[in-house]
Length: 231
Image (cartoon, rainbow, N blue to C red; front, top):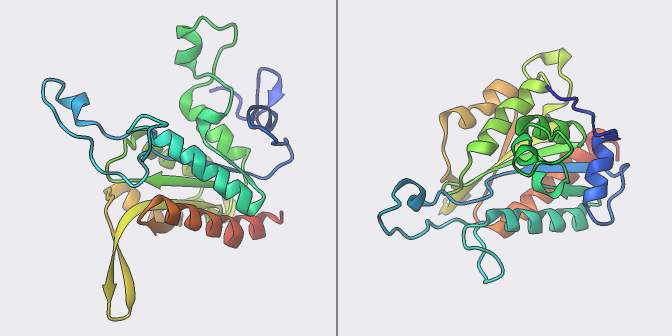
């Protein structure tokens, strides 16, 4: 396992700050994880024609590929940063290649394993958020949602390395009216993710669209992350 505090002689915080305009190594970072692409049926059935499934985070204009959720996540990070004063980012914002990228491009640097990157970025951050949508390709975020809580020993009670309230899962849902108000009905469902609250005391927030996701993230940062870390 690579070191989780520095890469190529620089701290992970410095690498993050160097990669994001106007960021500083002393900034409170918030790491956002989620699907970068849609689960495109053509991956599984290349000989058939299938439309891309609906996803609330899929780009809606011609500026990005229709399944490039990564672009939406980056835009949401910008909004959270502007609203809260933290520096929110996604993994691909940071100029550290993966091991495979370093090998494929014959780089002089060694690169960093994907999961090591994720844990290192979470370690350098004051808050971490996992985003799941029904149609998103969420295998990466699912792996991160397992590796990061385990690294921080969130099962360990008094021996936890972090307060579990600085982590949160954001899952796509639909909304309906009831006699007592609005009710969220999850659209994304996974037995292992659904029970993360039991395993790690992680909180869940639900969202219907990208605007609500941004609002939920801002509230998470302002209500939990900043007060708990004293920034």
